Every structure is written in structure tokens, then in C-alpha cells.
Length: 636
Image (tube, rainbow, N blue to C red; front, side, top):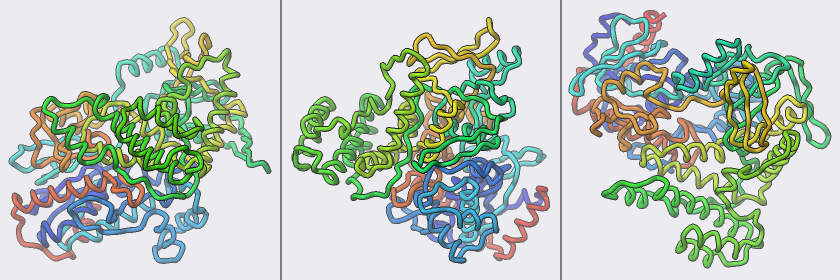
């Protein structure tokens, strides 16, 4: 972009990040501008080295073997009338409806995307490339919906520094550019970020370098350097969530292996001979719970019931503050239990001993111990009772004599989970899932929630598709995945020059390997973030929570300083903040927290621009196209 263009007097906003969260902000600016901003001119600068729409995580340039972990009906980037927001609803298609429009010819796509849509069944999990196409289309639609005098500029660069006084325009420096972008306000929509290694990771990296080993620290699996994982050799893996599933796929099917299905539905894996042997363990020692595999068969539970706006208001109003574990967690557990038993009593009353009205009254009046006693009295089968502790730690206290017994035990656990999560007779599990979403929506206002909640939510609500767990079982039977157990620890053994893994589940057993993979995303932290802009922002006075998240005003996403004062011109949304929500896109009709946040931030941004920026006279709409083309030529 030319220096003359950078010095334009038009009001400007820089959005750092161009993934689905940034698309949501652009869409909400378009929706709210007629009311709050009118037809005044505005420059929107989107800064991201990756293509807009999908951004880094959802870019098209990744393996076609990688899937979403949501069904097409469960993914949308558009608001609906369940979203509690001040701005107008601008409905749009879910991924499923978008695919239907592609099939009917109502939406035109490239031949490869059309082929992927044609091959997608109603209960299939889409590939990430297909989701990337949907997100790109949603971004282009959001841009097209902007008022005539709003110009969009895309910068395929990395933002490296942010400066400027609270009462003046901001400067955003881009990598490789001598002059900064100047803006009236800045929105950080950074998405999932890499992080600098912590002390343990540095030690493991140094150990690997000294002994010629392979160590892969936490990161986005699609970007990991997997070539160092040698065929036939053992690889220790810490982490049993979605990052592990991606790793499993990329070093098996991604290296030429294939599956066949027998007449009994059981999968058999046929190796290519290029696969390593994955020895996987974690704190729980089991994979995340399977996605639900059936359609809803009963009304949604009436949520929120125990953790709603009034309860959050009461907690936040306490003069002495509050404890998440003492004050919030019991409300979460009550909410999940209420949803579970509401579904059980209303959809499966033959498996209960009390009328729902009597159970509900006693449940609401009791504490945790009284609720457990009530469940034992009113629900005969223990499999129908909700035991969150056992659910969260299924291997707790289990001690097995050898690793072969552990393999049989874990396969039985996974098979039981698959059976239950695909059987509508256990539809209370689905009600608990809906309660988890409801709780997440309320907790956005709480701020930093500590490590337990996000991990527990992901374990129950963000697990892999059922077919992935069937593949895991096939790989286990083929000997290419070995389970380590719960409480897995890894040490660097100087005597052998290798990594050694042990677990609490099989005392005394140890597994050595020359390769170790941390199968998880880095913890979001402003102090160790690999993003230079975010680190510098913190160093310049932006507040961080005790767990390292960027502190923001829950009302509108403005960045807080260390005195708790919101910056009038800087906003931040996403997983690096303490207002992080379940995702930038989500299930339709769930009052999604991300959509509420996007709307609040967009409205605050437009109101600020209207009151402070005093935009000059508008220019014609045709200038917008020319501006984008000028930018593309200058940035190449």
C-alpha cells in the first residue's frame, strides 16, 4: 500500500487476524452500521499472512484427510433469533444448508469443492478443506454486505507491533513494511497462537538436540514436522485429544495405510510399512469422548436452570470476590445433573422410580450429597446416573498387572463409549452436551476460569467423530497404537539417551523411545506467546490473568490495563483472552457466546467511531473495488 494511502484521513479500523472470528466481526459491522454509523466512509484493514475466511487453522492448504469434529448441521457462522444481542439478526446458512445450496446450483463453487459436497452424507463429518470453502464464502458475503462507503483492504502479512495513545490514533506495524497502518481502533482476532517453550519444553528440546532425538513441542498438528517420526519405531505421545487424532491420521493413512470394513462393521487396518508405533498417554489416559451419533429424540432441557444470568450477576456482585471451585463449579455440576435427569425422566420414565415433579423439587432443594442420594433412590440402574467424577477420571485408582492387559482394558472402554454415544437409549448424554454449551455461554462473563473447565468441556463436548475412534481401535489391534494409561509422565533419561514414559495405571512399566510428541495446542499465554504483537502489548501494560490470558472487558472485549481500565481503541476476541468462547463458529440456535461477543464489540467499535472519528465526506462505492486492487498490487 502506498504512503499516500496510509496517510488517508478516512476513519480506519485494523483487524489483526482474518479467520472466522474476524469474519464474524466484519459481518456484525455490516449488520450494525446502518443504525450506528450510517453511510459514512470507513477503511477496514484485515491483517493475516493466511487467506481470509479460514485463516491459519481452517486454511485450504492442509491434508484432505483431516476432518472437522462437527457435523454439517452443527456449524454456522451466522446469527439467529436465539442470540441475545442488541444488533439485528442477519441469518445465513449452516454448513449443511450451504452444501444443499451448492448441490442445487444456488451457490457456485470450484469443481473440487462441488465433488466434496456431492460425496458428503447427512451424518458424515466434513473435511477441513470443505469447511474452509464455506468460511471463505461467508467472509466474501460479509464483505459484500458492508455499506457502500466501507473499503476493505487485505494485507497478507503478519502484524508485529501495536502502538499509540489511548486518546489518539493507533499504529500497527506489519512485517516487512517500513511504515505502519494508522487506525482509529484495532481489533485483535488472533485465533489459536503458537507459544515459546516453557522450562520443561526447553529442557526436552536441548536433550533431544544433544542425543539426536526428535521432540515436537505443542503446536498445530497440521504444521508439525512429522518426518522425524521413523517407520516402525516407537513414538511417545502426550495428549489424547483432537491433536492426537490428527497425528494418528497423518502418520497412518497419511503414509499410505488404508482401512477395510468387515461384514460385522469392524475395521481392519492395512499398513503401508511406513508408520511409526504411537505410544499414547495423558492425564486421564483415555481419548476424548465420542461425538453423539444420533439425532435428538426429545425436547431440549429448559436451560439455564442453576447457572444463568441471575446467578452470574450474584457471583460477580460479591464484595469479597468469588472462588471458581467453591462458588461456580457446584452450579455447573448442578446444571449438568439437571439436564441429565430431566432428559432421563421425560424421555425414559420407565427407568425411574419417582415422578419428575417430585424429583425436580428435591433436586433443586438439595446439596451435592443430597442429589447423589436422590439419584440412588430414584434411578435404579447406576448406568443411568450421572457421576461427573467417574466420567472425568475413568481410570482413577485402576492398577493393572501389565501393558497387554491395559490394551484390552482401553479397547473395551472405547468400544463402550462408542456404543453408548451412538445409542439414543442414553439420550441424557446429549442433554448434558447441551448443558455444557449453556454453561459455556454463561461463563464468558466470569473471566479467567482456570484450567479445569476448558479441559473438562473439551473432553466431553469436543471429542472426535465416532469413525475416528473406530479407526483408533483398528490401529490398536494392528499394534500401531499402544496405550500408556492415566497419569502419564515422560522423563529424559541421560543414562539411555532416550525419552521414557511411565503411567500410574501399570506401575513399574516403562516405555523408551527416541521420539516424543506433545499432541496438544500450546496453552494460550501472553507472556510466552510466539506472537510478537501480543507479547509487546502485555509488556506495554495490558493486563494478563493468573493463567496468562489477555484480560478484556467482558461487556465489549476492550483490552484492560493492569489497573482494570479498558482501552478505548483496542479490542480483543478469541482463545488468547479471558472471554474466550467455545469457537468462532458453532451450532445453530444455541445463543452462541462468540456471536454475542462479536455483536457487542462491533457495536462498541461503531459507536466509538461515530462519537470520536468525525468521518469526512463519503466517496462513491466504486472506489472500494479499486482500493482492494491497489492494495493487492502493492502488497505482492
